Image (cartoon, rainbow over all chains, first blue to last red; front, top):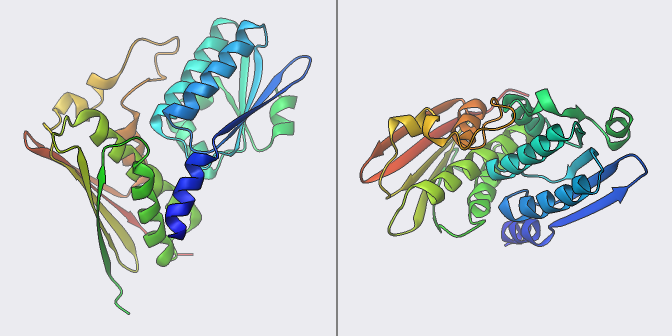
Length: 123
Length: 143
């Protein structure tokens, strides 16, 4: 039963927090990055980009699992930023997430940093 | 206590049901002291295989059947659907590339199999017009 509760918690705790500063914004996701959370993330990121914020950090520390649909959505955000000559850095990735991002060539177009502070400093 | 455990699980093709399968895999891997990274890799491979079955199999019964076999040094997972099968161009990813991107090397689709092959030690895909079975094995690395 404990395992079922953990699965349920993973779906219940979907959240996106945005911290905006003068020159950049940090988007922090919580939960399973699937199509549902991914669509919310894309919507929030696109809104920031449309408003001229093209220096973004996505903090995935509280995102324990990312599926390939979630990765597709992250790629769409990278592309939207590329078109506007923006920058995207990721932080808080697990070792497996980082390995997957490198395998998918995401690391060629976005930075990967261990923590939010270094991700912001390298925008 | 036996050193081998077999678990059979059938999940419906509903959104997020892949998490139930992934959790079962992680419990079995943790039971045998697989390291944290291996557990996460197993979860991801199960998730991607179940999503592929749900998205592409066109199975009439809309079920995914999963068999787990864990021993002291390995976890074997066999995931089966009773759909229409997959073609060779799907297997090599060419049919799943998706629309062109700003960065052509950032493929929008077809990543699931790439992830599974990269994270697991052995992957076997058997497909016919009666369904598809994806089998993969993760070996436990010594501490």
